[in-house]
Image (tube, rainbow, N blue to C red; front, side, top):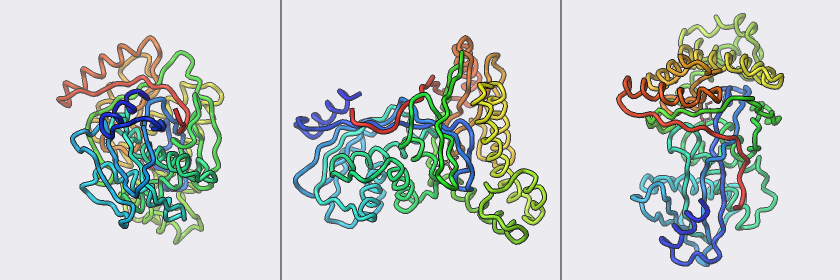
Length: 389
Ligand code: GLA
């Protein structure tokens, strides 16, 4: 991959001498979905697939971006002397630009530009956070190239979220950027999004693998119902607060929620809040089981998570539902659920080693038959956060 981005750099920008190469992972969330903006827990991990970059500083104020994934978009040029704001024609470059803007907002303005070539082996728009990967990668590069040594990896996560919220207009939580910036090989991150306290939990799947099934139904968070779900949860919380002193939905136990849910007074909002509360508690329990090496119960809780996302949060859709339903028919599947924002994207399943081939074959065939196009499958490994390579 390093060769690939370096060769790309040479082809597009000429001399690659002095270019430095970096990597940031993608992420998959094992459980704890749509809890991160509700003050709940999440349990994601960084992957060994991600985004690669070759980059070289310039002596003037130009930024030149090129992606080997979007070659038809060509070179995107921006002058640092202009006021940075999202511009539709700049396409994917709005993600790195958002980070440059966010650094400046925090007093870390850069004057000299750079040339950069990116290549990602995360399927784009799949729910494995290709955009957060680009954000954290850019932040890491700025830190290394411009000497912002005090910026920690947690800062990179917060800056990534800030730019996504304020520059790119998606009201996402902290999970994706945190999982990517703080990734650790073979571990998932048990993160309390209320306090940003976190713990690494080793993921020991014994004789099983993590398999991602990508629905190939494209979605962009911006045009999805993501912001609407968030607003619904905020409204439900407001109504609960009229009868109970509570700061976030993540503060409630299931019992407490049941005792106040009638205050919400709207069946849809009630379902949304129910998911947020129960999913948070489920995540805490699931991590306890994983720590006891009880993968079976962890898998069952993944399935419960999916049911709740389908029935109460309503963020799945027929593509994801088909993938999970078919997965659960395969002997040797320990757990399966949609992962990420939903509305397309991927599922994550824990599949026994001996069942992986059968899983890919039979889920793939049933999906094609029902949906009309192929799903893609990836057996993934858990990797580290951003680094120079
Ligand atoms: C997207 C967002 C995250 C999180 C998930 C759902 O990935 O970026 O912050 O809300 O959806 O769990």
